[in-house]
Length: 155
Image (cartoon, rainbow, N blue to C red; front, side, top):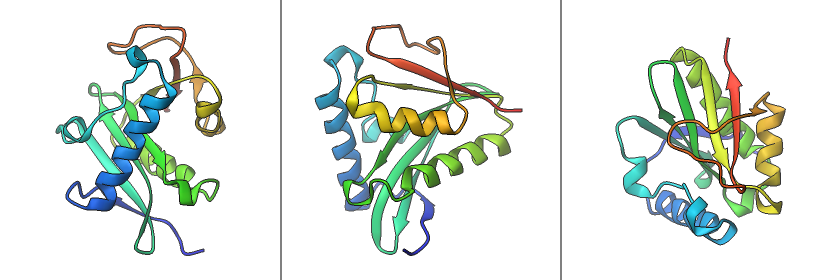
């Protein structure tokens, strides 16, 4: 397999738009309506959010974003591996890139919200493998019984 190349997302690329639409549809299908926090295209274009895509040759393999919450905290958003690339290291590659970027930006705490249930188990395991710990809601999130909150303290 060719190495995975991480690039800044090109929101004009139809492949990127299609994967983000797939992500949003998946979140809506797997979550109660009040617990869907996935960002649409306009949300990902905000200046405090950096979005990356992962490529295998000319094929889009995944996406992930970093949302700056303050000077030393940030949130992971829009993590999604294209179905053709599941279990091939794409999520790990994007998450590694996001964590390294967080370190470069001197972020002390990296957080995320995700759902619960079978659709979210692989993602939660990936985050746990990186050292993320379950914790309290952050930012504007409120506990719903469905959402899970994970945090990584960066030293």
